[in-house]
Image (cartoon, rainbow, N blue to C red):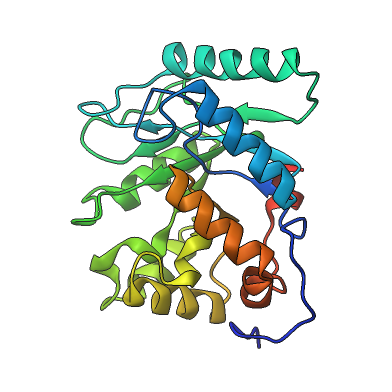
Length: 242
């Protein structure tokens, strides 16, 4: 059985995960990086920790962050041009994190991760009433659904069978790395542990928004604590997006 606290020799990088598939590093279009200099700083720091590919996934939430290809792809291009100026070959790309609410619509303009993988989220206040229908309809259209940070949905914490139901529907689960540090609170950490021990996660990511996230992640990686907690879990980041 996978052990959440499995002991290991010190590994002070994150090359074992290698690919970050969820972050908010594109500048000025959601609650993540505000300026392009911030974006570049995060990219360099993540590269130094051992990531070799980054996917940026800005929120798409109609009333708060009404992003689309028209905002996301130009922001990606602006960052790419800055990297090119510095002759930095580090690979970056973009998709989106879609809020499943009454405004979500399935169309041919959805910004997906490779292999038609689509990253979705729900409000932290309540389960999206139509979540199962949306997952089914996306799958019918050929999309592979990734639910972002399931450990953070407090409404599931006393209703654990809902996690099993979503997995039975074919939904992939993505862990926020900082969840195992207690950053989001003890209950979230315990649910992350439960999902890890029951082999429900498929992927892991930073969900990086700001300096505090970056600082805690850096300390966790360099101390070896992140690898100690997660390095032996069979995450599929490289398999699916390498």
